[in-house]
Image (cartoon, rainbow, N blue to C red; front, side, top):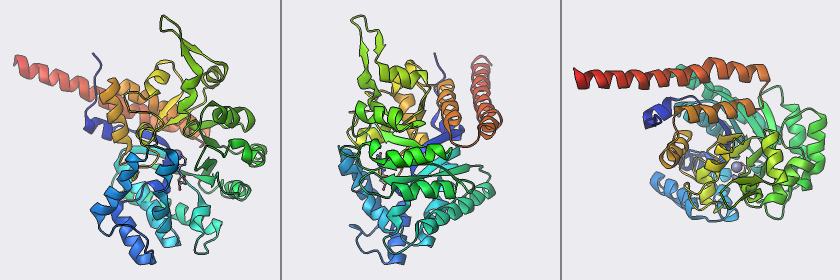
Length: 377
Ligand SMILES: O=c1[nH]cnc2c1ncn2[C@H]1C[C@H](O)[C@@H](CO)O1
Ligand SMILES: [Zn+2]
C-alpha cells in the first residue's frame, strides 16, 4: 500500500514548476487594486470575490480560444512597470509559499506595450519583481529560484523581436523562449526562422503544442522547430494504440518523444478547463507516467484555473494514488528538464529535492512507528 501524502506534506514537499503564465497567476485583490491605480476601467466586476469568480468561470470555457479570452483583463492591468513588477514579485512569493523550489514563469512582453512600454522595459520590470519577491520569500524563510521564459503570441508577428530579446537578456534571468496563444491555425513552423535563430544562438525553447491541436502540431514543434520541451503535449496519446490484450503500441512520433526523453509540461486542471481532456481521471498523465515518458506536473494559470502546485499534486494523488516516490519522480523529471545550467539543476536535485523528500518519507515512517507505539502502548 503506497504512502499517500497528506495535503500538508504535498504543500511542504519541494516542487518544480516549468509551465506557469505570469498573466495567469495574479492575486484577485491585485487585479482590482492595479485596475484602480492604473486607471483600467474595463473590469467586468468590482469586488475581490467577484474578480476571483469571474476568472474562475474560465473553468467552463471548454475550448482553448474561449479560455484565453479571460487574459485581456489581467494583461489590461499590466501596462506600467510598477504594476508588472508587483505582479512578478507576488508571483515569486506565492510560488514560494506553495513549496515551489524552482520555477520557470512565462510571459509575452508584447502584451504589455499597449501604453507605450518598450519590450525591454517589460522584461526588466519582471526581472526586478522576481528579485524583490525572491528576497521577500527568503526573509520569510522560503527559498525559491525563478527563471523567465519569453513568449511570442502565435496570432501576432513579433516572434523575431522576442527571440532577440531572449538572447539579449539570457545572462540576466531569461532562460528561454515559447510561443503561446491559439494553437489551431497557427502552427509552430510559422515561426521557423525564430526557432532557427535561437538554435544557432544556443538558446533553449519550449513550444505549446498538442493542446488545442493534435499530432501535426507536436510533430512540427519537435521535428521542424527543434523544441526541447512540449507545453502540454497531451495529445501525444493520439499516437498510442492498444492491442486486443491491452498492450500499448507507440507510433513513431510518440516513440521519438519517449526515446529522446522530451519533457511534457502537463497541466491537468487547465486541460480540463480548455476541453483538451474530459476530467482529471481521464487525463493521459497516468498512462504517460506508466509508460515512462518524461512527464512533469504544472499549473499553467493559477488564477483562471484556481490551482497551485499543491492542488495539482493533490488532485493526482486523489485520482491515481500517487505517493511521495511518484511526486519525487515528477519533480526530478522537471528539474532535469529545466533550462538553467546542468550543474545548477544537479545541485537543486541533490541538495534540495532529494533531501526534502527523504525528510518527508522519514516523517511518514516515524509517524507510523509513533502510531503503532500508541496503539500497543
Ligand atoms: O494553455 C495555454 N495555451 C496557450 N496559450 C496560453 C495558455 N495559457 C495562457 N496562454 C496565453 C495567454 C497569455 O496571455 C499568454 C502569455 O502568458 O499565453
Ligand atoms: Zn500554457
